[in-house]
Image (tube, rainbow, N blue to C red; front, side, top):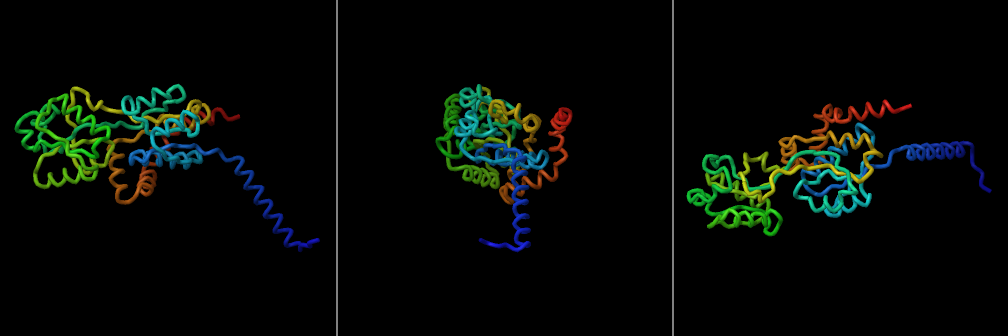
Length: 300
């Protein structure tokens, strides 16, 4: 038989009380919202800003789940995650949306994106405003018959091949390397006063570092503007109305997002997100206002 001193019993009682209190708090704590995200720089910033806002304003725990986009859609439809803030519609993710939409909820548009061919603003719009202008002999000569692109074989590369064929751009070839190689080659040419046309997409920090403009593309090979949506599993809005309301009113100005993407290359995403949220907290708070009023009006 073990005998304990009164002090030992007091310490044991205090530990049991603390453990009971922690268990009670854990029972009261809301389950984490599971946000899926793909390792795209714009998605990482917008998803982590949402996480920061939810944890700060609603005290809502958030679990971030990273995976490829196809896996994210499947997990969302099966209820294994709660929402994903990077669904490109109406074109890029149309196949996934059509396959799973009966088990999903569209919470709203966060920002807009686009893909296509772009030129630096040092290329006069009076001479090159449209893809069709690339057929001008003097324009082809100044571009040396080259269209700079990132990796060969990706979706945008294949669309570029279609565009070359559709617009009958004879004398042109795609010069493939990588995202970094493409932009380095363009920048090197700019320093020498040379023209360039690149395979561009945004959101991307390139639009913050250089003044670029898309070429008009009347045949619609690249699909035009896209909207990036936040999409949740079916029933999410009823279970988490405040979170759903936030995402329905959560928007990011494209220029600011691209600026954050450029800064994150030097100081890291987490630092950029923390600084931006602190500087814009009143704007984020406003995204919850109606949700807070609704919640308070339904309390007994």
